[in-house]
Amino acid sequence: MAGGWSRDGAVQDQIDASVEDAIERSRSRLPIGVSLTLCEECETSIPEARRKAISGVRLCIECQAEAEKQQANLSLYNRRGSKDSQLR
Image 1 (cartoon, rainbow, N blue to C red):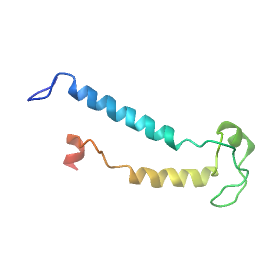
Image 2 (cartoon, rainbow, N blue to C red):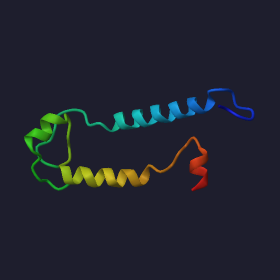
Image 3 (cartoon, rainbow, N blue to C red):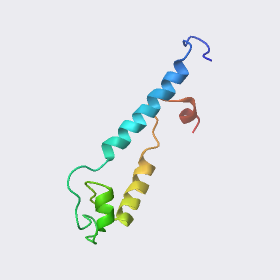
Image 4 (cartoon, rainbow, N blue to C red):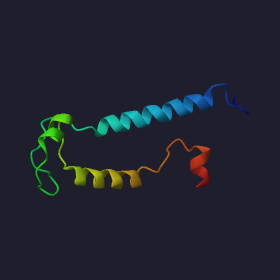
């Protein structure tokens, strides 16, 4: 249900584009290549099960959790300027 000057389906198009951007951003963060045996941050051993499960892994679980926490704090910007983001 669009209103004003927007065409029908414009809101859904915006939602779909936001989801596609989030998927692409997540895919671009996936590690590729050969997994490391030692964490590149703290140099602890990365378990073999983790190395097999995630190809190209570079961080231990603790360092990965911290990196993801910091990344979450940086990704609050909505470049499409949705009404929700304008109200914050």
